[in-house]
Image (cartoon, rainbow, N blue to C red; front, top):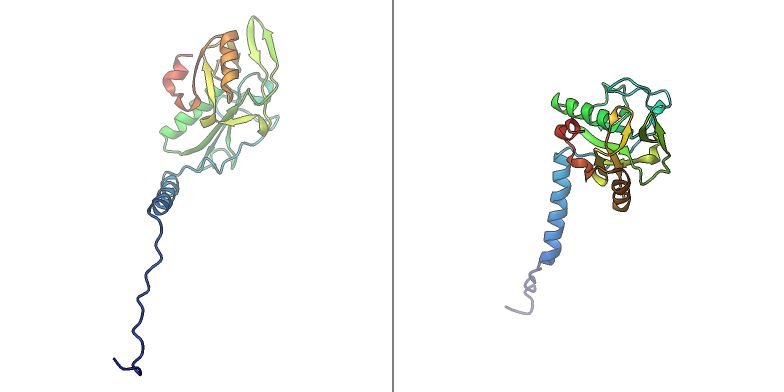
Length: 197
């Protein structure tokens, strides 16, 4: 090699990414991809306030006229409900409707129920029954995955025995101590749960 020859190119080493950072990035991307493939748009759905004259999509009763837990289910296709979430006068109506819709091939994106940890509920007696007030404003709803429900308590809803939801475990314990019942994650509710009410 003479001094007039061009210098040999220095090999450029590609920038390396630490293995842990690479694996973390791959895992995060995988989680996002899986969520997208599963059609779980539940984080995109937000609860809406229920109109005062809205009838329950399951039983037809005017939701705001009755006590207890109310609910709403957001579906991928909202055509059967006229472009809005399905809305209900009780947790039992909400779950029954959702289970039937899923059996027919519809996909539920998110289920919301009254979160009695988030509202100042009134408790009242009527004909020997104990009932909680209903709340139809959007702020009163909790996402099913964040709620614990109490089944088979002394408190009834619009359709009789119902599921009473809370986001705070302390509230669940206080409720069970006062009104009885059995607590379970709201996302574990199935048809057998409803039948056992």
